[in-house]
Amino acid sequence: MVRKYMWYSKVNFNNYKDAWEQALELFQGRTPEEISKSSGAQYDGMVLRLQSLGQELEVSYPSGQVYFRGTDKKPIFPWQLMTLNYLGRASGVELKNIPISYRELESGNVYFPALQRDAFIPFVKRIQKERADTVRNAFTYFSPESRNKGDISLVVWGFPRFSITITLWLADEEIDGNINVLFDKTANHYMHTEDVAVFVEMLFRFIRYEL
Image 1: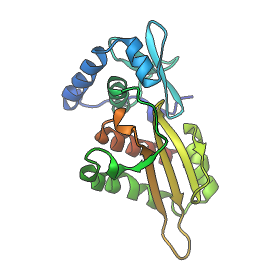
Image 2: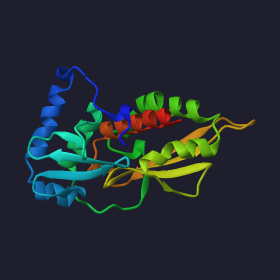
Image 3: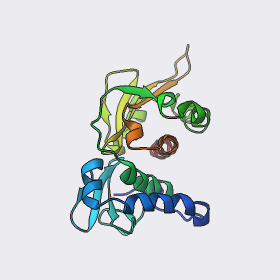
């Protein structure tokens, strides 16, 4: 079942009109077969289907309308926009399995302070007093893959070829909590650096709802 906080919420579309039109132009400038091959989405002749945060999305071609599969519900607008950007940008390059930090992405140093302020710091503050199993369970809905690092280490797939590796150290009597977030070296072949930040912030907000 799709969580209510994931559904489309009304926004002033005029604030995002240019960004949506640019994303739609890139999306429509490619054939659905090309998009499928380069992004890891599946095309059935009518819609493109792809996994995102443990959910299956359907994207109509060429309209670019995004829905949760089998429903009449749309993801919240930033998620729709990032999905369209992903499909329009995906290069098809093979993942390297070489982790890099946000600062190592294109212009990552420019956007990192905002990401740290809006996503990392609030998230760590929210979870640092929680039990490890409570935090781990909050990730479960997003179909993570476990890793053996820190107190909690998980890989969450934002899209078929865009992963987010999150390692958390929870607070104790001596030290504060901390977080490390890494991406595949190929991330910019699939996502704009700004979109990566928005996606991480969205994911952390979703996890806080699950706590």
